[in-house]
Length: 190
Image 1 (cartoon, rainbow, N blue to C red):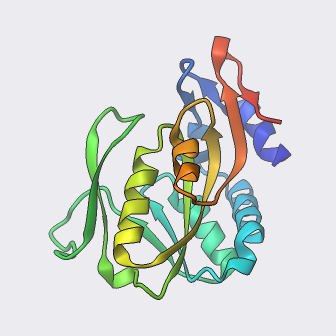
Image 2 (cartoon, rainbow, N blue to C red; image 1 turned 120 degrees about the horizontal axis):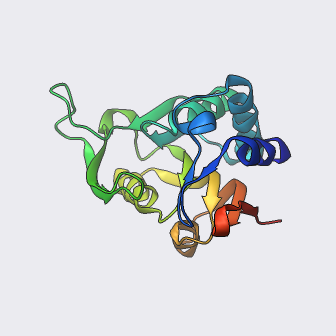
């Protein structure tokens, strides 16, 4: 997606050789028109796969996952990162480290909203080391649902996350792939 690449170049902030801050696009502020365009792109890539639900992890994946679910005409389900008093005691849970937060958290998905009859598309904003993605993949697999594929807005392909998901035989589609953040410069995979 050339528009997305251009916006990343204009508004992304390279924090280090490992970290790209995309607060202006994905993680703090959301551009509705761009988000809907990303949703249309993911929907076009997975439209023929019989998706019954789109799943994401709160919170930065929600806008793009919503746009994708809207375009596919299916429900959006998001895994929570915090247990509440109203949480499903039978929720599927996986403990995962967070690359950007530097902490370990639980991700929880209520069994009420996913079943063995579902064909799941997992959408997320960024994949770096892939810990959250691997955690949600485990949850989906334990639910008995079929994981049809993973859609990632920005894949940092110089980190192991995308490769690890693909090595599990899972289809992973990225809208953009960044191969380097060296010397403060964003380099895309062409």
